[in-house]
Each structure stands twice: as C-alpha cells, then as structure tokens.
Image (cartoon, rainbow, N blue to C red; front, side):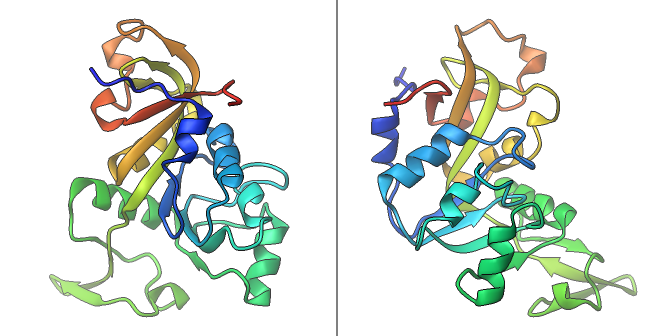
Length: 221
C-alpha cells in the first residue's frame, strides 16, 4: 500500500501555479487551516478557489486572499464574513463568482458523479441566470448549472485512519465529502490520525479510496 501520510514540505511540492482548488469548510468550521498555510508558504499564484465562503478575517481563505496574486478567482456562495473579499471584488482586483449555496453543492456533487449538470429553478430571472442556459422540462423552466471539478481538493477530517478513511464530527462535514468526490487529487488534514479499523465502518463518510494523501493537523514541517 502506498504511504499516504506526508509532511507539509512534501505537500507543498504538489501545488503549482494556476491550479483550480476546492477547499472544504463552512465559516471556518471544518476548514483545513494547515493545508491553507502550506499554500501560502509554497508561493503559488493564480489559483481558482472553490469554497462555500471566504471565512473570517485572519482565518482560512482570508490568508490566501490577503496575499497579492495568490487567488485569481473565487467561486463561493457567501463572502459577507470577510470584508477583504468584498473590498477586492468591488475594486476589481479579485473576480468573484457568487453561486446560491444549494446550487454550489449540487454543482460539486454533479462534478463528482460525472453528471453533465443539474437543473434548478434557483436564480431564474435574477443575476444568477446571466450566461446560463434555460431548459424546459414538461412545461417548467429550469437553469442548467454545469458541474464543478478541481485539480485538487483540500479537506479536513475529524478522525482519519492511515488508509484515508474519514469520519467527520458534527457540522465539520459540510462541503468536505462532496469535494473529495470532485477533484483529481484529494488531500485530507487529519485532526486525529488513527490505525486502520479504529473507525466503525458506518461512521466513514469519505472512503479512503478517494484520498491520495494525509497531513496531520499538528504538522509544521
């Protein structure tokens, strides 16, 4: 079995300029802070970042957005908790694509399931519709929301075994399992790393077959 546990130094070598990244979390809950720190330290630029939100000041995505040139585009459902994101968007220095939260989740799910998109009435007749196709089914109009995929997904698990099987506690689950399905490379930050078999099978929400690498939350090198 390939060793999945890697150091922060090894992690940085997996990043490169102009990647599309999915980053898990919801308002800083379940956010892979150590992995985000590694992005900053790696010096990569021009990233397209897909995340539910841009977290709070001094946390999570703020650390990327506050660095010039790191994030070239943000795709999210909410940016109100991070004033810096709104400021950069209004200045025209950070393109932001805002997507209704449910639609964002479904677009990621579609990317993971290999679907051509999802049909929704959310956003019909609003700015959300701009540039999207309307499709009529049985006389009812829908918007076609195309799937989202990424080069890499950075997620966080509460308990992770050495094969990458993941258990999430409470709301830390949020977008993490969806994103693990929709990226070419998946890296999990493990809050608690355990031996294989320590997690009851029914508690596994992301199977290890989807996970390429594991980094410990307390990893600093």
